Length: 294
Image (tube, rainbow, N blue to C red; front, side):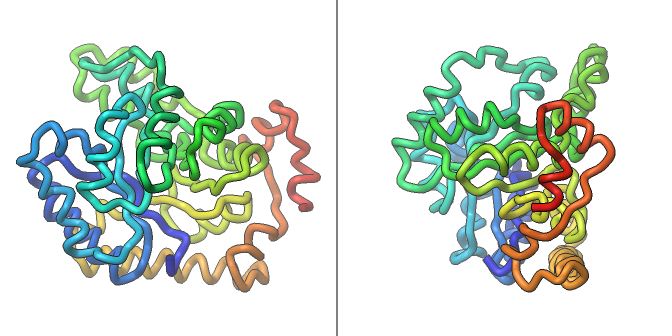
């Protein structure tokens, strides 16, 4: 990767997604950043939608591409990797979304066993990723033990899928009640980098390289953004390229200002942890003063 930026899972499975994924793939190839796609179940169940996904490899033959399936869909894992020629297979975790959507699947029994089966069955590394509510240290350890090679925290602070599903439901009560449910991105990131020995991707609410610098200073190995990339792709290639270039330049400026010449030095720069993040971490037993001095 030329930058610690992933465009996280957004699109696929709808005819309109083909043009968007073409734009995303073109910039991912040009800028050598990671690109994640939305759930591939739609393409496997309905082959007519496959071209909304495999257009990515046509325009991004050498970029780092992430496939995507749900935790219980172990039977789809190998096919998902094949469709995209994925470098990494992401397993999305979306219990809140399932709980709010009218047709949601509320049976989460066997999730960990299914994730472990996927890790064993595919020939590429597996990433576990949340979809907007963050991952706790305890769950991260369980996922690491199950065999995942990366974790994307995707914490609260970005797109709320409870909010999205609220607008699809006849009764909006539950969606509005759980609209902001989840562990904030900064908190989830800080928890995981001190709890697991695998790379952590921080995402959920990122809008610039300055946000990314803060997450990497917390210990993240890379960061993910979805909404800014989707907006850029919708506006056209020039806007998308500008978004990536502004991200990279703002990250460089932040690194310059703290004296970090590379990502590893940024990960070890000084921190001041305050506000909601400080309160949450201290409530869970973290010594934030010692952490900030590391």
